[in-house]
Image (tube, rainbow, N blue to C red; front, top):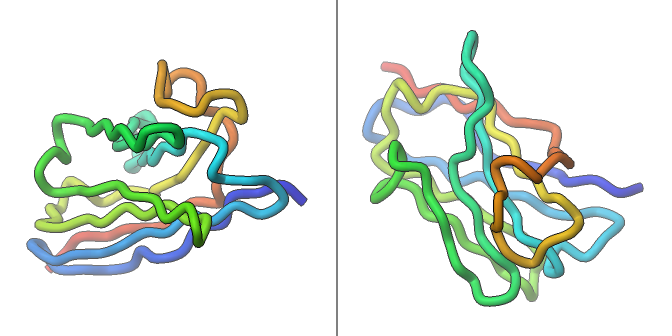
Length: 125
């Protein structure tokens, strides 16, 4: 069965850190660009970060630059999203995604349409 399986997330205080993981089942994750998205209650889903598979290029939304780091371990076939200095406004359900077409992140926020199951991140004191 083809799927993206996420882990990580949870409840953290403001200023804290969390790491999300995304593993592929049924296909080779290393062949594709992988993005992370999030959706907060009452808001549209937004692209957070993307990493290409060919050259490791990374992209970040302005709201997370300097705080979040996306990485991939091709030997372990996993993509991570390290989230530091978390803020209450980072609270959302986070999803990893791919488009099964591109090695890079070209138009990633538009084209990625195959999603992981989602994981809740709550930043609150």
